[in-house]
Amino acid sequence: MSEALSAALALLIGLDSKLVEIVLLSLRVSLSAVAIAALVGLPLGAAIAVGRFPGRQTVIVLLNALMGLPPVVVGLLVYLLLSRAGPLGALGILFTPSAMVVAQAILILPIIAALSRQAIEDAWREYEEQLCSLGAGRVNAALTLLWDTRFSLLTTILAGFGRAAAEVGAVMIVGGNIDGVTRVMTTTIALETSKGDLPLALGLGMILIAIVIAVNAAAYLTKELAQRRYG
Amino acid sequence: MSKASILPLRLAEVSFAAGGRTIIDRVSLEIETGLSTIILGANGAGKSVLMRLMHGLLEPSSGRIDWNAPERPGVPRKQAMVFQRPVMLRRSAYGNVAYALKIAGIPEPRRAALVREALESVGLSHLARRSARVLSGGEQQRLALARAWALHPEVLFLDEPTASLDPSATREIESVIKAFDAAGTKVVMATHNLGQARRLGDEILFLDQGRVVERSPVEDFFSKPQSAQAAAFIKGQLPWI
Picture 1 (cartoon, each protein chain N blue to C red):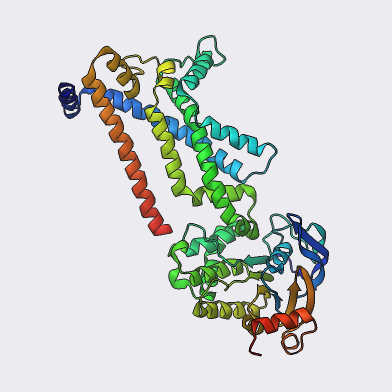
Picture 2 (cartoon, each protein chain N blue to C red):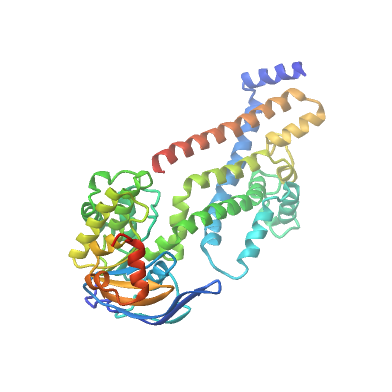
């Protein structure tokens, strides 16, 4: 155990090129997925928060339920979509980082949409009369609330990032864990552990945790500072 | 902007019920231009709901509410409202007023001058860059007044604007309201504060259990109330008289 740990530290300190490559691919995939999910999920959350349409409550319940989507199931669905015989097979992106981005984006879209819906709806309750009094329509109101809840939404996006960076099932299925192509931190940890190469697995595990902590700390500080400044 | 006045505002047999309870009960009245109108009544008399019906934030359960010139979408509103607890957007004081102008469709180049004038009118020019949410309660309410008044609305609704403020902030708010009144804006204000009603009002609309039981000039209302309810209310509020 201690041997594995010191070997892991050696890999980290030496910035082992293989390790760096894996970390960078992980970040690239998860950050792209978060960007796409936020781009779709935040407006979607705002629309559901402010909108009035039949079946709204059903949509909210479903969206909340989808937050718990099992990554392997998302992986399987995206696999079926992208496989050669599937409806999107012509794209030819199965077993590429693009497929992993798609799978993670689908996985965290409900998280971002559901949590932002909640934050925006809470704000809407406070703002509704004032915004209606000023004559703001629903689209304007949604945009205003997106901006005014921006610090809460940062936490929402972070929850999505945490989920994407930590999941292994979806990227394993659609990426295939191909060495040097689609191998990311979580899939490597799973593989190396089963092979018995504990130092690499442990080193990656530490980096993964460090990244998640660093991102959360940065977001927390931003939120604190901003809230002190803007109230 | 067209010259046609939106006043008078006519309410015909307006009722409003929520949760099986009648809050406004067959109110018919006319709000004319000019004199400031105070809606007076005890808590729960329906003051806030009546103003929200007039302002269009609530739809009446029955009856009609007609402005002389109906509002059209895309045209800036000629009425504004200030609430008991101001809702400040997460931006600067300046940004809050500019936001109202933007929503009203005022093009960007014209906004700056209007914002400065509005902030000036409530004495907040020096805090223009300050974030609105960190201002004091009194400052926030003055900012809410500036935001409501930036487009010089014909009618300004005020829902107990000083109910959660201390006496000195209240005085500041009252002097701003007086200035708006003097500048020709029709003030319609709900309050349960008799002193304030006397200081700011020209006429009193007395509400009791969702009905307008009395409407008279301020002096008459206080010296010789017509209804038993009004007399009891005045006596209850000022037991030493």
